[in-house]
Length: 375
Image (cartoon, rainbow, N blue to C red):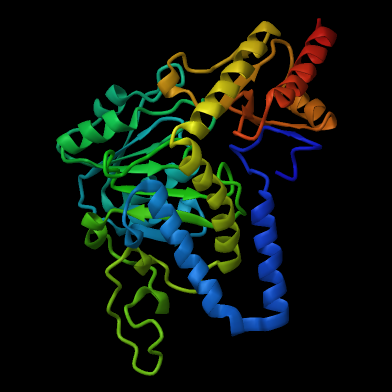
């Protein structure tokens, strides 16, 4: 990671830094575009399909269930706008969700859809709380895999099992978890999923992925159609609106090929680690570092919100220092080349696998020095 020698970077839950391979892929694409133009377009297009295959491998699903999207919001809207809502239907979301997993569902109120909010319990999104909002009108539950402020990781397996038992679909906003925590769609058959690649996947902004389970493909109306949506995409002389039998039908126009190349390069890093060390290697490393940070923050006089149970923990550690404004801590941290965010009234540190104890030490030095000055 090129950023690592200078910065202790803990802002992956906002925007992650580019990996070295991702940066190299962008530079290579730019050089090709400038020097060779579209003579290398087939190579670029093949890279998009390679990324599709990589994501399918990561999720253990079919490549034709993967759709390229510019961001998580687009993936959510594909489902929110595409489902054949009926007046009186309901959808359940946790309270306190990031707006991307709120507004698309609220926008369905014009169709007579009720949006129900599952209360959080001390920042936790429990399956029982979600299921308590479900009745015979409920079509779908949409939930973040990991809370963007709390760092609480939902019990996804339990949620999918209970929801499907009631005939309810599950949409997963996976942006804070994809590539970090294992998800096998053959074992945990989430119905829909979306995530941008610019956080934990260490790719550029504007390049994301969505998953639409094949069993649901024809349940979604394709509202945004174009030449890329149809089977004979390159038949410009005699175009026919016959949609592809794949999630790529939702890729209406030209792909973000430079973004796909960069995201693919970073995703290769993740897949290589998984292949070499196992599917839990990254999550275990991240959670171990986050637990160390949490323990040392508490010892330094901070108040943290880290979930007690390991299965609900993530790389996000949100904390507060009594008497100190979060923005003041962030400003001082930046001065000392440490990057954190301010979220939900606290300071959010998002630890990745390439971080180490020295990075944690640098953040703790900021907290300790400010706490001493504050006293």
